[in-house]
Image 1 (spheres, one colour):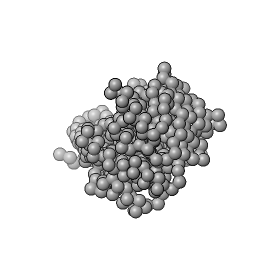
Image 2 (cartoon, rainbow over the protein chains, first blue to last red; image 1 turned 180 degrees about the vertical axis):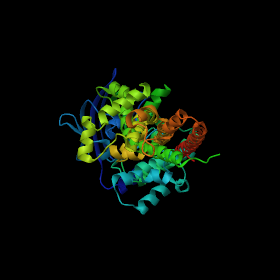
Image 3 (cartoon, helix red, strand yellow; image 1 turned 135 degrees about the horizontal axis):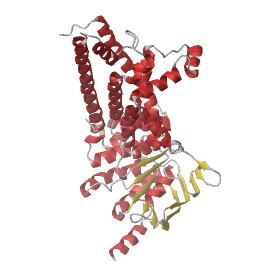
Length: 243
Length: 231
């Protein structure tokens, strides 16, 4: 919790995310409705609960059938008003489960990609800060194909951070890693939450992992939000699972 | 052994020029059509696919004749191009390039289309979340990842253009120094008594050129693939 307190102290005003969206995916009805006020919001639930679909809707990769998605005063999606801001203009960072680094670009160019595309001038201080935060300086000249799973995910986090996101989405960023690699990366994610001044939406089905990262929790089951609250929700969920 | 006559050298140089130019000019169209066929969903897609592949299955003479009656000077389109832009294809080396380009087009499109279809589209989604517009996603992700297929397609198109005979001779005839490519020159030589020796030399030259082109494209494609998989 000390981490969460530090996050608030360093945050430049809270970012408010409002999601109220519905989507029919085959027989599956997804109905995401929650708000997030900065910090690290966990989207928690079993596999197939619709967690990834919800953050894909926030990112703009999946178009809801109805509803609204707002980030601060900015309307990202509003079905009734026919607003659907394209993915490339939402400025929402996304760390994918499999990293999705560009295989034909070096690590350095992967990290610079969002800045190029966003048209931002070079900012060596920000670059060095992120490289140091994630400890990826020794990887800059390499290609993604030559990275370990843990290194790949750290670079993916750095790439998303360096596009200056207003919000950072992380989709099970540790799911493809073994236990040792998870332990290796978790401290970086904690630092990210505490130092990077960007609100996080962190998707996972792993309560132990979320307990270290999250400051608030949105619990999903079968496409519906069943609970919202603090990280005590994780204890209850874990107790259920053990019972 | 290779004491080629000046006329034979002219045919070799002309063939290389025609094949290279037809490949390079066809490339942007080939990429555009491959992109449409790989990604587009529109009415008439299978018709476009069939039309693109037509030169592969039609007798080359038919393709050459169709070019003649559409791009010849007395054809409406040919006359229009000649009158308004000064572009003349009939009986010119440019016409040979058009014939080669059309004949090679299906091979070019096929190779590029396959490599575009093999691209992991989730990488393009990732680029979109990093503020890349559709154009920049294409230029910085799709195109570089399709590069091995583009190289292979260009190689096939170049080799096809070098070997093109039927459509070329039908469309632009057999004019030494203008439309007489290697294939046409070989055909001409074996029609005249005592031309066999010269024909054989040209056969040797064309084997060498095609072999070199194959090796070069193999090497380029291997390098491009290695780059993609992190060397």
